[in-house]
Length: 424
Image (tube, rainbow, N blue to C red):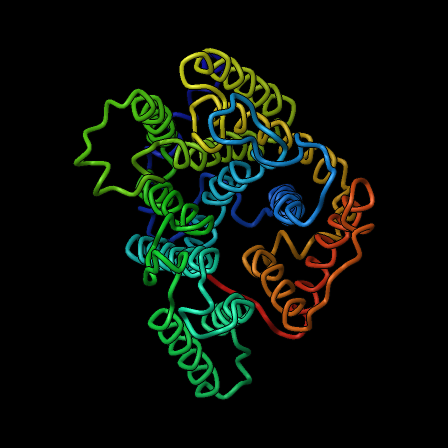
């Protein structure tokens, strides 16, 4: 176990007057809140680019199967199957930094909780609207399918955009009001499903952003109330890892499953996010002490332990994203940690963060970047633009999809420069 090499003072680091939330100054003295590392933004940006890339693979033909998702019931994962868990893990990595920054600004415990809840609601709302677009029935709704995603994405941006202080406040109020009314109208008129089974607007499976929202809610609240206590964070991570196995063993009563969202009761998704929180706490401890080598050895040891857990649990439930299996949780957590450490040595220790400047907007405006492909697809459909088959086949198609991902990042950067800054 790697914990025998872990300094005991980490376990007790916030059991004193310098507790991250209890201190009257509102500052987290346990970690250097003023120190910002490039690694998390870069890792988030790389993951976002990869997410856009794999989400566009549907437009291609004659490409390697391992690039996409493995089908349900298959014991194995493809490249696309490691992107979503990495994103969840990074949400956890960012949490201790985000909380420390808000404490530095003077937020109280209640304000931190309020921020977590409001951000969760925002993610759930966006997730639900996007997922309903997947089953949109144009004839039953009375609206072209290609208008749905552009309208909801523009509404999201108007609602959660940070408007310049120089603007008349009533302009921002009016923009948000128009966007909210637009979403309400779309939800009311929405009809989805095949012609013989039409249904109304509903959460369905919450969507990617919704699943992230539920995992963020639980992990965020645990991190806030843990006040930097290592044992609480470790216990939270262990609880959801065990819950993942218990859920796959079908030991959870149906009554609980019908009430608690699957992203929480299933254990796996929240376990990924809590793994990020735990990794961040470990990382911040060693960075505060300037012990890069020791940090690396501990996280490498943690990764090895996770890989071992994946090997041990795979025979029971398999390795699968669509099944959200424990082996998938452990292995993808290990992959993300290893990538995180590698980027840290290149970008922060090696001072090479500028190497990643081309994708920087994807790491600093991630939600906006996530929405851009929906806008691009919508505009393409409105203008009836289609690419020739040669650009959608094999290696040429993969290059096209990679350039599409970079284009989406570039559009995100352009939107930032003209004042579009979504703040959740």
